[in-house]
Length: 357
Image 1 (cartoon, rainbow, N blue to C red):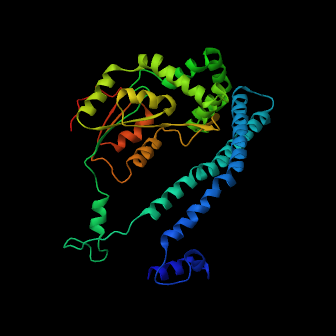
Image 2 (cartoon, rainbow, N blue to C red):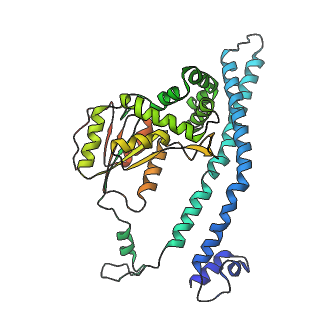
């Protein structure tokens, strides 16, 4: 029956045989799933050149849009209303172009990794034998056993934001200043200003603006050199930004047997080093991209902020979600994580209550 359904679903004559071999009662479904998984290996190489061109075009459009926005905000021509109207129209046209050109990369970003992961799970699945029982479904035998397999576990997880929650201020800004010095830090901020403005008005993501600032600040720095800067920052400067009461809360969760995870938009480059000293089990953070040991000026994946924090948490615990999730944050970037949790605390919205299991 399964073979017949698959044959019908392929619609085209001969496609079933090409995928699964000669039609028979013994179909090697794992081999069939492995074939498209293997072919996906060519996907990144074919799209990388196109993605680079799209990124370059987007960067140029954002700069043009920021310039047009700035000019249209100061130009006043009482004797020629057409000048102001032309600037307004051109700004709108470029704004629409920015929105359009950002759609394909957003849709394709990480697609090959996600599909490969799904296929890997399917290929690695073992046949499951379900025991029938009085509570089983008559239509879908075994469904109760399956749902129990993916039900809640006894895990209790405490998820902490870092900047502003555990620390008193933004750590990434201090890390960059310590790594490159104040003059270069200031110059990088000025160069990245059009991208920062575009982010503020909703035309560019936080991740893209962060990557551009990091690119201007660090340049093509070697990974080992930046890693050494991260170690120096963690050992010498970062401890003075950390709130002692938050370290005590982390220790309290660990004493209760809870898993403790750090979820932050700041770079994992230095957060992973600090988290080991603080007793965290896992770090889910933004990653900088390196190729051949050199910083590319981009992020490796998404910026771990807002909705992406929930995506990262769910990806981390997989089919073993916690029965209780504690969440600690301080800003809009922690909203979705707080909504996911059974228990949450946002700094500035009242004193931190005691832990209640």
